[in-house]
Length: 623
Image (tube, rainbow, N blue to C red):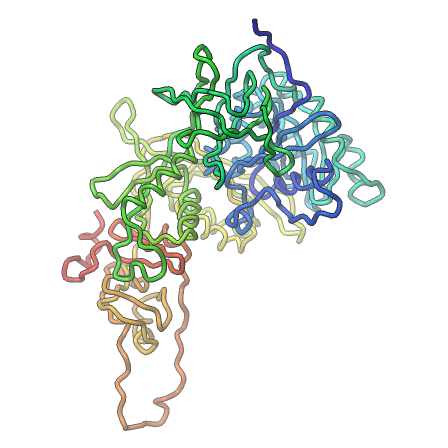
């Protein structure tokens, strides 16, 4: 006989926030003030952003777990990504929690990526605590942002219980918060002091303890994976019922088959560490070892009568990209030139741990197609593999089209919300309209700390139009613009979009670039490489000023003579070189080109290297 109860000594929450709204900083201070760390312990900032890429880019990429203890209650906290490209991370952890902290910047307000994650939380009936963060900003508009958040809840069809959310005003960087709007000014000025205890108290009061079945056998949905060198693959998830024990015989229920195994280790989260325990209980977020084949979405059960839980469902990918074994003449010089079998295994490993990524075979045995949610998601995967020492090539990203009921072609559409200085409005509007963006909203925002007027624009634009536009937007706004997107769904095909109108400058031989040769090529276009760089036939060294490709010799040296003339030996230097980042390369390449990625270099090349086998005419190479 089983009975339904709540484990009131537990709380499971996640933190929802757009990139740079202070989510990871808030977790830092929650851990400090809950006494998770010893007083003498040295702490790094942003302890939850454990990966190098997360720290460098200032974003959360992977969902991670931690816990704090407040009196007799354990609060499990899941730090979720704030970027829509990592939506798979968000969707898979929502089943682990019962409530969410919605963190909103007091100046910027709720942005599309906040909306994306909040929509998932409300659809699953999660209780929300609104945290208005960065109330100390000089351009904060607290009351207006609160009203904007209420409008967002109404727009997302929140029920009456969800829309009756408590509001906390905080400054995560200083480690204080208050539920009273009237106390904000005194706390900001330093007249009063505060801490984060009001937030802990609000979470305990608002978010219910997890529902559990007493007397039931073990049932655990796997939402995340990790790996230990000592015990192998670790399965992380919430125990919905029953108790898991060390050495217990259990069953892993996959999509089509059951696989029995023994639990060799059990862990729970205490602070940032996984602590080994003998048992894991219902309601808690636990970790089990014992199965090397476990995948996200599997259910671990004890007993044949315990059913599998519904598998985690994520939205379908919108972009595809070809990953290929490196076939360039410089292969293996700067990293590991991997064979197709090992390359496939590495990509499959990524697919198993990231439910938002799909894998497809191609007609070529050394090329594989990866499907994902966005340009940033691909860039992160490429950078991770590059840092692992791999060499490989990637092609131009392509949009995944669909067909509607009448047979018409449809493509993914996104809403881009742009917050920027008013002076950049004209340039940015022209940039988005060239890419079939339709302006749907224009708001005169507040003023920034420098007193400059800011505006907020909303565009509905094809996903194709967003490829590579982020760097151009930052240039147009001089680094002061904020760029957020959310997938709207599929709409009618918008026709052809302007891409690169210029051809490429292509090396016609193998060798090393020479400054004298590059000086003679400067008038032909924009160079991507400086002198003394290894090149090979078919490698792209710059952008032609005309629409056709041009094969050139970047290795030509000046002929030496014993005749000197006045002024012939004066110093001549290159006017400028365009250093191409990975994201810029992804935007720049055409269908007949590869990006060669190594641990030390990013090169551009033609798919066909021999110049006598490829045409330089644009109409011949671009269909």
